[in-house]
Structure formats: C-alpha cells, structure tokens
Image (tube, rainbow, N blue to C red; front, side, top):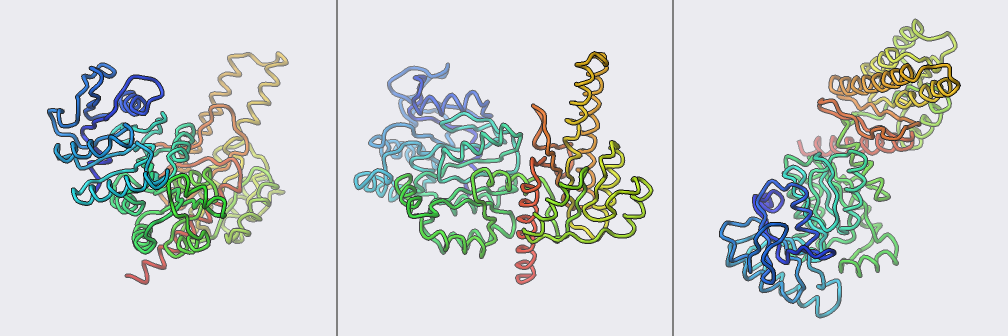
Length: 488
C-alpha cells in the first residue's frame, strides 16, 4: 500500500532552497504555501534555513520520523541520499531529479542501480524525472508548478508531469475537484499499474484519469486495469499514436510506446474509457465524478428552442443513444402548461416560455418516467444571459433604474441556482443523470454546481460535449454490468 506516500504526516525536501527557479525552491514553497497539514523538514548542508525553517545536513539528522522524502538534487547525489533514507528507515521517495534513462547509456545504468537498490531495501520510488505528487485532502501540493485544485474525486496518473499539471490547472479554473496526482516519470520502481492498484482501493478516489505514453509489462497492466475498472472508471489518453509521437515519448521518459491499435484494443477489453485529447480527459472524468451512470441509452431532451433539440438528437443517434417517443402521460401534462404549438414529442421544445417552475416540472416528468435513462437540458441554464442583455438595453436607454436592474440580475442568478439545485435533488432521487447545456455564459459563471447532495452537475458549453459524456458513461456502465453478470 502507498498510504504513507500519498498521505504523509511528515515530509523532507533534500535540496531545499529559497533561490528562485530551483526545484528545491519550487517543491518547498509549494508545500508550505499550500498549507500542508503535516510536518516539513528542509535538508541542505550548505545553508542554515529555508523559509523560516532550520535545515538539516541530511535526512539522518532529522530527529523525528519522516514518511516521505523529495529528492531535488543532481543525479550523482541520489545514491547517497537513498543510503541515508535506508538508515533513517524511510520507505517513500519522490525523485524529482532527472538525468537517468531518458538521457542515454550512462543515465540508464544509474537508473538500473537505483532499481536494484530499491528492490533490495523495499523502497517506494516515484520517478525519477517526475513533476511530483498532490493530495488535496491533506493539502499536499508538492509539484514543480503551482496549482491548487479543490478536493474532489478525480485522481490523476500522468506519464507527463507538465500535461498532468495543465489538467490540474484547468480543473482549478473550472472548479472541478481533484483527489490526487502523481507524475510517474521514468517509472524506475513504481509503475503505472502500482498507482492504478492503489487508487482502486483509495476511498478518496472515485475516478482515475490517466495519460499514458507506454507500459512496460502489458500483462500485469491488463490484469490490474481489468480488475480496477469493475470498481472505478478509468479515463485514459494514449499518446504515441503515430511513429513520430512514439519517438517523442521515448525521448521524453524513455517509454516504449508500443502499438497504439493494440493499446486501444486493451482499453476496450479492460473497460478503460478512451479519451482523444487532454481536454477530453478532464471533461469525461468530471462527468463520471459528478453524475450517476445511465442504466440504458434512452435519452430525453428538453430545449428552449427547436433547433438545438434537433442538433442534439442527431448527435445522440450518431453516438449510439436512442431518442424514444414522448409518453402520452407527459404529453397530456405538458398540454396543460404549454401553448398549443409546442412540439408534442421528444425533444420537448418549451418554445421559450420564461417559467422556471415549468422547467423544473418538465425535467421531473422526464427523469421520473421509466421511458428515459437520462435527460439533456438545453438552454435553460444560461437563459439568464438573454434576459440580462434585454434588461441591460433598457437600462442603457434610461428606462430602468440601476437598483431595479441589479435586483433583476440577482433574481436571475437565484432562479438559475435553484434550478440547478433541483436537478441535483432529482438525480439523488431517481439515480439518473441530468446534463444541462448552457449555450450562453457570462464571466464568472460556474462549470460545476453542487449543493451538498450525492451528485453534482457539470454545465456544458455544447450538446456535443454532453452527448459524448453520456455515451461514454453508458458504454462503461454496460461493460461493468456485463462483466458483473459473467463473474457473479
């Protein structure tokens, strides 16, 4: 188990510094500024203090137990530091240091020596050549670049620290919660499958996001991925899809990228959800972290305007989702609430009615009915933009008082938040996903909305994004149900 690696009570940084642009400075300042809940020990024999903390000449000189050591010093210093860690009975090391198998024959030999030493002494080593690790639940932000995503359920395994960092940066800006992050680096000791195995059993991880350049032991990876995906969704982006990309992966981490077509087949076989880009990695992971899984592929669509309903229906059909007929009971109920020219079908066109209670009721009619496994709601979230601009025009023409306008805007936000809260309540009751598509946004609008319920809502910018997420969630749930039946 890697509990004390990802949830340490104390950390030491070898090479700790205050000098700008040094890795020992990056890691130390990030840990301290991130308000790590444990103890911090700087190690540097050449200086007396770092950020107000007294430094120690080596990890052996630290008077208390240390759960995790970060090594930021040059490659030639690493073996002595590992010897010190063994003497101090420290098992967990994050090796930021580069200059190993990614650089050539000499680096390859040094890495082999590290592997042999780690195996002999039972060391857990992340890296070398890693960006670092993050655990938001204990405020451990120990990476070379600063980002502070809020705590959540998505854990990230990235064979590119820079790419993993960027995903966390996106998550922070979009209020998407992250649980843990590891930049696996060269994977000299701990491999991608070790992190998979750990996150499978980690109660704080709900979804596993992976960026993969190469896998050393395909059989072990397949076995662990297959077992893990029965319990938690794995969303993966495989790099090195082309010969050029494979060569770039080899020069990056020393990874053997292997055949992309074979790896894609492995993803299908093991239930791994395939992403086509880094952005899509986060988009899909946020969906799996937020919504209940659809139990089938029957989709209800509610829209404020007919055209968007048509576009969404096409997108559903192209991704293997069905648009069933609207049940008569729902038609009868909406006949009493809508003008006679409404669509009387699925998609349900609410013909621009400005009535948030109607919006809530229409969604509940659909999500409560056994004919539907999921609902997509188009344009209701974001409709405030239209009302805002209309009122702003009247304000600009001097026909509305500023205080009246301000109160009106506050009311728009209240109505939208109440609608989103209701979507979460309905998902908690019926255990079906309801995906809102905004179409229009204002500066500062949220991407993820939560109100303390079991689920959250991700607010999508386009029907294509929402349908993609629904189709992937349906495929994954279908895979799990079939495998669960086989092994029951």
